[in-house]
Image 1: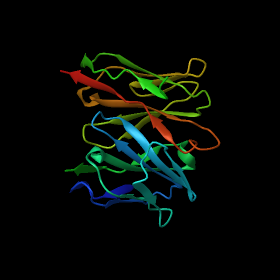
Image 2: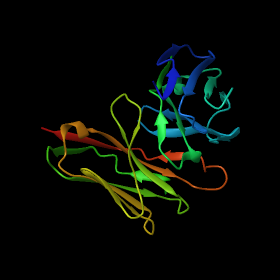
Image 3: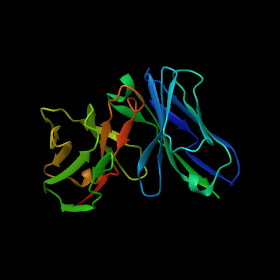
Image 4: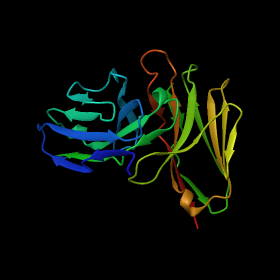
Amino acid sequence: DTAVSQTPKYLVTQMGNDKSIKCEQNLGHDTMYWYKQDSKKFLKIMFSYNNKELIINETVPNRFSPKSPDKAHLNLHINSLELGDSAVYFCASSLAGGFTEAFFGQGTRLTVV
Amino acid sequence: RKEVEQDPGPFNVPEGATVAFNCTYSNSASQSFFWYRQDCRKEPKLLMSVYSSGNEDGRFTAQLNRASQYISLLIRDSKLSDSATYLCVVNKGDSGAGSYQLTFGKGTKLSVIP
């Protein structure tokens, strides 16, 4: 069983479109995250979500919005996609607010054309 | 000073060599420290947690120096399969925003050569 799963694995879309990436974890973790890994391979936190508390990295444009229907899911919605949004997006989860190991999904490679 | 700073490498070492990676972090309130490994086009995976007393797992040894805000990873007897990017990771440990965020360094790329 996959611990943290995200779909789709690859996403190619045109500028200006709106898209979503889904993430689910079956580990019973209480904290979930979205990370962006750019072309320089730098992993940057976008959001973390713990017990309905959303912590947003202030550098993330408001075109990006996380949605958590329940504790096991944290989806990422992106509006008005731009070329610079092309990257690999990783979902992750952990126990206890990140004081223990975080488990990552396999990543979604987003290409905006 | 960057939150988590690492030498990006690449480190090209022969099989059997010993290699050391260093990492510094800026927030003295940080409470949890980790080394993750990321293979090409794969997700990061935990290699080991780092404890104040230092810890060892087989060929891997991690050290933490809180006074200097410095973390290290030592790999002995390098194998070809050790080739990957090694990420230094810190949990800020603040009570407010940031307490649930793992901050990654940019990673150090290791290539073990036959």
